[in-house]
Image 1 (cartoon, rainbow, N blue to C red):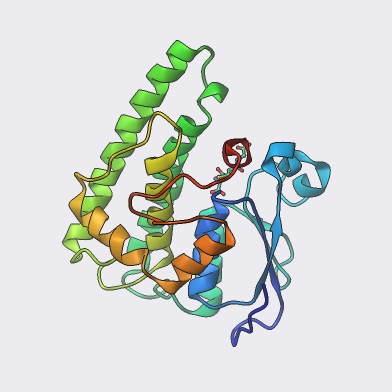
Image 2: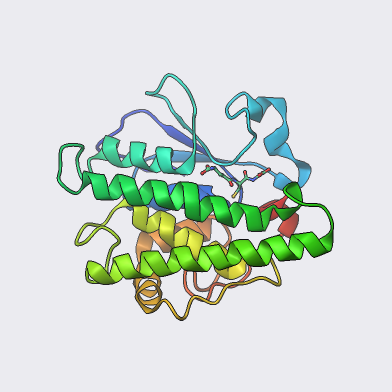
Length: 242
Ligand SMILES: N[C@@H](CCC(=O)N[C@@H](CS)C(=O)NCC(=O)O)C(=O)O
């Protein structure tokens, strides 16, 4: 993928797997119209656990962004998208702006609470053994996930419903949107209905019309609605949850 950027002269490289956390980074790269290359990792063959990839992220987690202007590869979705926004001077209030604190607060909340709880539901067998305990843990963590969406829905309502940080389109909007997508799809049999969060529903509906979201979806073989009532991608599930 070649795109010229007025902001960064050196290339960015995104390591990805379809519909994984890299989707958030891609939304941001596309929205900012930054030049980047993407490198596909095959999760079904555990490519993300091989030494070459672990040299970039020792945890083997996806995504990684290599920014030629940084002295080390970057992991952690929240850190990567904030870095990109700061570099481009868009999608994040400046560090000295009065709304910077709100962005940081919600970005960290989405990353260390909402996304972290979703990960427990996705990878439940890393926490408990046996189907019965797995089912109990999934249900209980997904109740927490619903309460996180309720909090985020109320925050959207406060700011008029368009963006999480009132009147300011930020990277946090993309991160929230991707978490909402995954909660509606994964894990199979535990798909979450988000219809009671009406501000969130309207927000997702509007965001999924953006060109950046549609281009990102195409690039990751995601068909149909991207954010609200999404369809399961036509891909091997092991490639997404493996
Ligand atoms: N905290 C990490 C989580 C990333 C994450 O959950 N990545 C998933 C893909 S969506 C992954 O690499 N899963 C493989 C695994 O957990 O073994 C981040 O925000 O980047």
